[in-house]
Image (cartoon, rainbow, N blue to C red):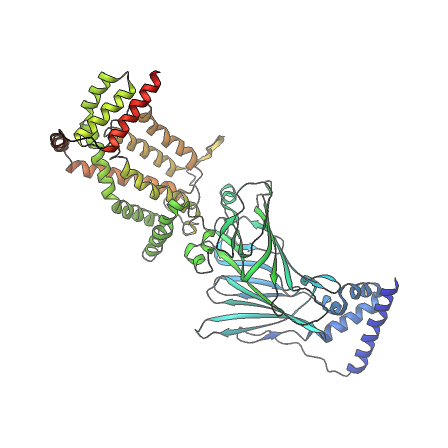
Length: 602
């Protein structure tokens, strides 16, 4: 024992003896009964109990006590205590908090189950490690080393919203540290505030350093899809959203600018920190424990929370990745749900999400909802489908003229193109008239590719033989694994593939496509069969129903569209365009072709 430790031990013993002498007659504080929700429950004031415990330790292990005093100084008494687990809950979530350090130990989402139909633990004491640290006169102080006393009460704000408030306090004669958790009814958000009262010269830091490592617990049966969708997301104070990639390798990033929120997002759920002001000095890390099937990904962050007049605050979000729910939390928080690239995301954000929310009010079967959405979208896009069909029909009726050009100029590709352009201009036919309407429909087609894998609405919802529309339907298992396909057969994917091949065959009868282009239409559905076999059943079912509705639309159009009438319109255009001059675009195109041909011959 060195000189400083001996001096500290003597001073500490003297304080205990003086305290015991003057307060020996203080009556014992009785144990408080467990309160109801509207009452306040509290443990005894920390000072007397902690001094008594410290005195007991001093009698049995003076070396340990001296080391504790040397490390924590006047806060040493706060490092001795008995850990309690306290609970905040509403109808949506249950949050368990430790009296040691006031750390979140466990979060259960009460409306959801994991893939094994057990209560959904978003995080627990083994998977999640949080720590707050502040600089002190004796070096960095970790708040999880301190024991806090607790009280809980129910309050109601001016709008009539009830909340539970858990207050945890640790104090000595030199000051007090208070940590408060607030959980409102019907909310996934838990607000936390930290207040340091006095402790001048003891707690010297002007910020709280926070570290959090979370081994994200697997909640879905399809681990590969969960890992593919997992992201460590963040949103800067300037309004910029970004994330670490979806790879399995270790990824790290230090963010130079202030950050508004950081989210550990797996496929359908997010655990996040949202700043009252801004987070500073944010670093993020993620990796994938490939061999551990119970963990989706390991995510971690370290950051600083500025103390303003001894106070700091932020909000935890523990809840589902439901777009409308996230949008109400804070700016950019809805980006935790991947709605696709900018040219398709608008379809999901402003049309599909609202359609689902509306139809959920009337239907509980999500297979039926998907069918209705297909019909509504196809009905809205019907004018484009009609124009596409008419454009292809025009190309079909002028096929004899195109065949004549091929016989005459088949060996000269440039001349063939020039003559085709003249023919199209003379007959008033555009070669892209059948394709352009289809291109305009593409955002809706691709939007579903992003919506269904991230739609929590479909999670654990059954339809026909599919037990869960948010993952692939296993119609039967294979005794072997097919590369790039898997060891299961998705019946919805097979139906989609067959319907797409039939549609391609039907479509080829309406077009003039030949050669590789004609065969490509048969290859693509087979490729998608391999890709979509392990995608959500809801996605394959949507594409299957979409194909079937398209069949019906084209059959209906065919009843009212007569090739002879279309031919008559083409002849009418031909008569009008006999003396029509070439447009500047046509002239430039012909000139470019001639120049290209001349260059090739040289």
